[in-house]
Image (cartoon, rainbow, N blue to C red; front, side, top):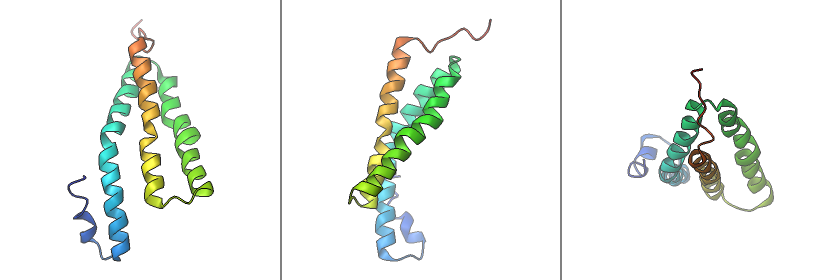
Length: 115
């Protein structure tokens, strides 16, 4: 995604400013992709262990309580650009990743779902 970022905006008939914003956001999305992938792996592993409520919290509650709230606060109370806010919102999932890793290492997630 990072490699294709300069070329994707060229496919569209948009002003240069839009192309530049798109390029920057594609680079951020590409750089954050490993973080998101690993976070998803942690909570899908937790889900496979029978802890579906935890994954609901990861999916829905975290998104609204952390990610959306962060975006709202940054948009409302800072003078950051849209690219800077997008960067912060994309990389806030590092918290979710750390929580998922802690749960995976604790073995609390593994529940006997066959009985």
